[in-house]
Image 1 (tube, rainbow, N blue to C red):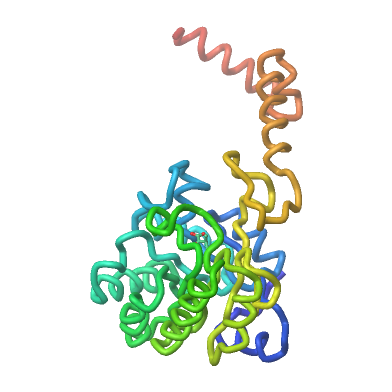
Image 2 (image 1 turned 180 degrees about the vertical axis):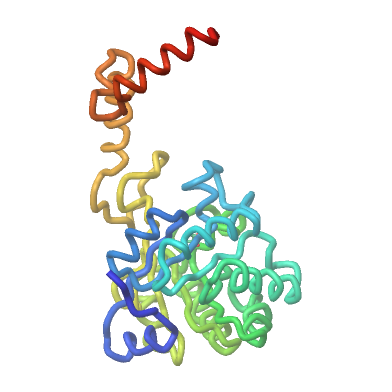
Amino acid sequence: MTRKKVTLPVLFKKVADGEPISWLTCYDYPTAHFQEQAGIDMILVGDSLGMTMLGYDSTLPVTMEDMIRHTQAVRRGSPSAFLVGDMPYMSYQASSETAVLNAGRFMAEAGCDAIKLEGGAEMAPRIAAITAAGIPAFGHLGLTPQSASAIGGFRLQGKSALQAKKIMDDAKALQEAGAVAILLELVPDRVCKLVTAEAEGCIIMSLGSGPDAHGQLLIYHDLFGLYPKFKPRMAKVYGNAGEIIENGLKQYHAEVKDGTFPAKEHYFGMKNAAYDELVNLTEETPF
Ligand code: KIV
């Protein structure tokens, strides 16, 4: 199936038409191919790849090199989805100049359509600098995994009125700085609804923050039981690929051991004449 490229105007039209946007994380070529075929609107190459693909306990060890390599593979698998590159830890926090240079790498080397970075009003100057460089920037508020230590772990954010107001103020600051979209991760549904209602020229996406945003994001591994350590409550499981893979691997292992694999159809023979000639040749020049 060949799809029309999803661009920012296409996304804003969906918002205007009231059509929710679908968004998934993705980190590799084959999965990107399947997401392309499924018609997923947006793909995030998240620095969550540090946990889902590389087995770290957090996203902090992920480098720009890791991100670029995986994002290039995803772009090859999905030419049409709107592709967002996630700025890894310390690729944008230190200065606006570093932020612009690293955001530029996502666009030039990996074929991204936008980048995403975490943080509230304090990150507005980074969003403004990246936007001024002509690069569409997404904000990320609520549970921001790169500051998990500072915000007390992977838990619901904005539960109290004061905390919720801070999220709303941060969303406004990011929008004023030029953010084209903001992801709200794990905030109460009514906070998400308020931020979405107040958004102007900015797409609000929800990850575990309820149905009232302009669209939904999930971590791909959570949809299919592919992350062995835990399944967050916000994720819906659409199939247990992890179980299928584990059972298949056990069967392969057993079949190699008992000789069931390979069967005749899994390898190739040789014509008798060629084999006889080979035997003659090896007799003339023994090994
Ligand atoms: O890295 C990522 O996948 C993310 C999501 C958790 C939103 O930033």
